[in-house]
Length: 149
Image 1 (cartoon, helix red, strand yellow):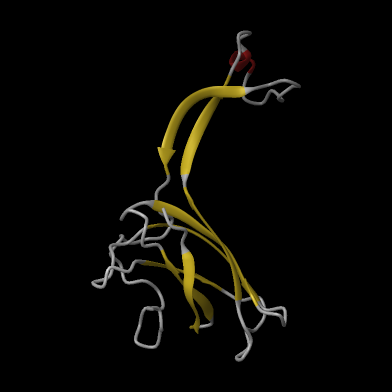
Image 2: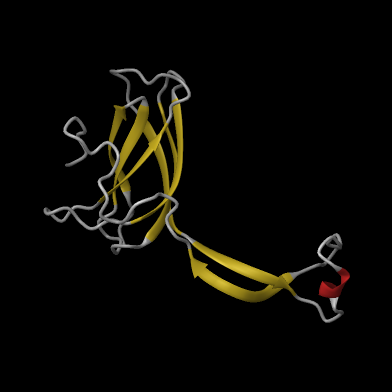
C-alpha cells in the first residue's frame, strides 16, 4: 500500500486546506489524518481529522481534504513544510484482569501497582468524525482550489 502524501496546500476562507492523495486506500477505509503545516517565519497550522476515504475522481485519483486555522499568517513566496500522519483507526475496549474479584471493589477504587487490563471486550473500527459521506464535496474544492495534479 502506498503512503498518502500532500498534493496541494491552499489558503481558503482563512484556513489552510490540504489535499492528500490516498489512491491506494479502499473506498470507505477510515483514516486519521494528523500533523501540521509550517513556514520558516513561524506560521503554523495543526490538523487532526478522522475521515472515510472517498470514491475516486473520474481520472482515478483519490484525495482527502483537511483544513486547519493557522496560528500565525502564512506568507506568499515562502515554502510550506507539511508533516503528515495517516493511520487506520480502531478502538479496543479492555477489561481488567482479576482473579481476586477486583471489579466488585467499585469504579472509584484507585488502580494499584500491577493492575492490568488485558481481557479484550471489543474491537471496532472508528467512524469518521466529519459529517457527510464518502462522496461529499470536500472543503476547498471550488473553482479557486487547485487540488488536482
